[in-house]
Length: 428
Ligand code: GLV
Ligand code: MN
Ligand code: MN
Image (cartoon, protein in one colour):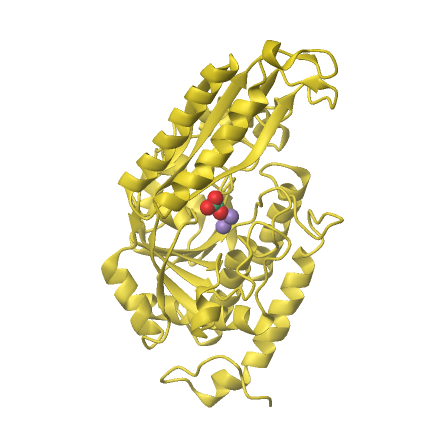
């Protein structure tokens, strides 16, 4: 048998080591099933909430659960829960249950791993636990949170935010995608009831912990040579919509002095985002914009664009966004256009539960490095009501939200095994 590339953990038995190749084969088989769903020509993925691809992924989730004899329920916010040791038909789970999982949706042209790796790892980690004779009566749920990326309806982690009552359900029902379809209509078309959306903290309060495994979205683990890391905190972050309005005009005849060109004000805001993020040691990105009428030979009438900003501390995040707002307003005045700015979502800094983190670190023999991240996660949203923890799996390129996102099969299996160890410890 080839020597496993992942670190040995204390107390590991020879028979567990020999089952690793088996786990690798099962990971590869499961991953191959997911690979075609929502894949684009360029290798990226479009897996938007309540789209056909998402419905296919939900069907895959139900099949995985059925193969393991797990009962599945869709909660009031569209999140899927596959239960081991609990029958959702009998009501809420008992106090002390554990949950593990992530999300299956993607950003436009996203990578294969952001989200699905955490769900696949959760199913396989449960297999490992059960093979070992596992959980002594504590129910375990595998969860798929809906619209984590906010790629379709604009609000990131929408399923978990609704559940912790951080989003008004009326506002959520009215959110629209780029074609004008509302969340309510998209849910109805998929057979879900949008009138049910809302506060689900009673369910969440039954959980002793939620653990999310995720592909790393940077290169830290590659740099330190570790296959798996533990999250310490999530930077505060948010999204702001900028709407610049000017006047459409002829690109070949309108004199420069007569133009009201919203593109110029937008461009100034883009440059300021970069400058102020660099100054405050944060990150700020305009990665999405829509232009009307979007004609090569016309001055634009309007530009709508979204700023994504993140920083290690709230004050720096505030300073970055204030600087971009001020620049957008000044540039708009200069160009004779208007700008309206609204906050679409805002997530405060999250420090993962220190005692759960210590237990997770202990389960991994203290060998997994701790790391902060600028990326948002359902585990960060749930942290408001449930102790949560996260594991990261090495991504050598550091690329995420694009086709370059990658983790080796061996590292993914190292993640599965570590997730099983964490669950095993939490269940003991
Ligand atoms: C989710 O991946 C986010 O951080 O935007
Ligand atoms: Mn993501
Ligand atoms: Mn994610």
